[in-house]
Length: 383
Ligand SMILES: Cc1ncc(COP(=O)(O)O)c(C=O)c1O
Image 1 (cartoon, helix red, strand yellow):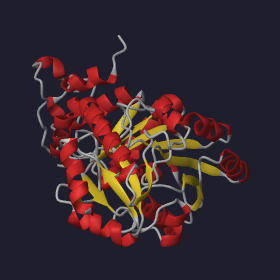
Image 2: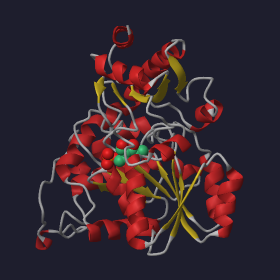
Image 3: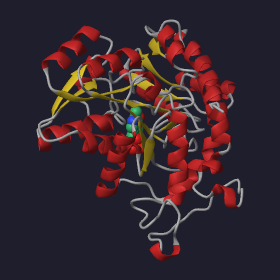
């Protein structure tokens, strides 16, 4: 029977390799480095936790099912899943096409691959299909990578269209699904070869762990990510896997609440005279508002606000009492940050300006607090 994602998430222990033996609601943490080969005679033999571990396998099986893939590797951070993607697909002198509006850590990693391995990085605006088609036709591009929604610009990319263009030009297509998560959007069903994400954010949901994962569409690609994860030691430790599993069953209800609270606050801010612009895919004013509703079941509670001045943006952050000044998102506590200073400090001012981000842009991650308390906090900070 084909199940909805939240049904699978609520029965996470069933995805464990030997779940049937006890029926436990939570699978044990196999906190071990090695396994005795003489003691095992099943189809699957474990030898060393870097290559395979039953606790990690439970989460990998779950992510494979909910993303609609053929295999997964859970990684020790979200950026490790991006690194693993590059290690698997790119070679020296490869070409990669990347949406210019991307996470600062991904941007930094691309610079490293460019400098060390002579990888040519083509940055483009993925709303301009003619331009990306032109790059794909005129360059030997191995990999196309984008986020949707993008962080920090909150652009919505038409994944089906980009996936088709990548296929027509023999490039693999990877989507960073950290913002939407698989409860909302499943890139592999829209033409992607890889869906990768930071589980640090909404998926673990409590800000208690840094982690990530990458799911591959085909058995061959799944074999390759597993091979490179073992070779490079990218895989996640079982204790962190356990922490993530604690948040997973509530992902859907948390996403609904993040979405609801963030829309109320975005609409409130849109009416304030100290604000120039609010960029939230749920607002009618967002240029890809209808695509956002088509492509995602839930809109994440992350959005950007351009204040009238840098001083006002900085004062606002300084004077809020409930909102922390923190990077990352998807936690129960609301937070604000200036991307140019924190999450996207690896970009130059000019590179940020090209994707519409300035020093007076504040990124909001709305948590699970009472929304009236959040609005009162905004009012007192600005008064
Ligand atoms: C879109 C996106 N991808 C990947 C990452 C990296 O994840 P992590 O911080 O878990 O390494 C982040 C972190 O903010 C992100 O925003």
